[in-house]
Length: 351
Ligand SMILES: [Zn+2]
Ligand SMILES: [Zn+2]
Image (cartoon, rainbow, N blue to C red):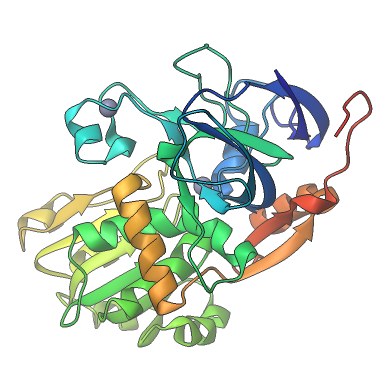
């Protein structure tokens, strides 16, 4: 086994502390990645507070350098900089996996952390750590010409918004709404703009409207302003809702054109909407989950080509608990990324 260390919640709801643990030795198609940066995702916070397998090492937006390769690896070489996201294994043979939509694997995926390895039954530990061992099918070359820290969030916030924007064919001539300007929302605005759509950002915070335009939105609307919302009726081809807390969907459903789709990425405890609004206008209410290997590679290529990455604030490992507090208060613009070079080696672990 490989002795590893990182930041862990030892039990449900705990603050993160330094923790030493073991990772598997490399299988023939694995690489070992020395983690340089790891993004802080809202789902990390949910996992720490939820019914996860503890101790929990979060983190599924990684950038790092290949330090070892398995016997059959040809895709990467030692010294390559790679990125790893939210999924690290799937069955590989079901109808979803055959289309490289591994996130919808019929046998279930292995998540980057808090998952169960299909081969040895071990619990997966995430990227808030010094090293990750991953099958090369779920690792990608870093897109060229971008700051590595700002690339990390592309692997969750990026592909989670990219996948639905592509699936619902966002392109020039389409009017697209983005609800919420957080980690996901700010990526959605950048992507939808670069895909050539007319982009309208909806936010409850008036102070985010200026930012939204700087990120590429053509218009920005305060979603609590009923007059402004009423003026949006039957206007949108597609609306991507990135808000995870419970909120009314009717204003957005009313804003959809005939055959328009409202795609909700957040998973609130309940959906508040009037089914009648789907009937008038043949509107659709949908959702979407991260992205598979095909879409992830496509997104990374697009980001390199269009010089798109996340707006990040790099923090030291010691500041991650404060970072979670700031994330909860909505103070992060727009993604925290941990500099893993600042990770302390806990007592009992040797680097
Ligand atoms: Zn995430
Ligand atoms: Zn599968």
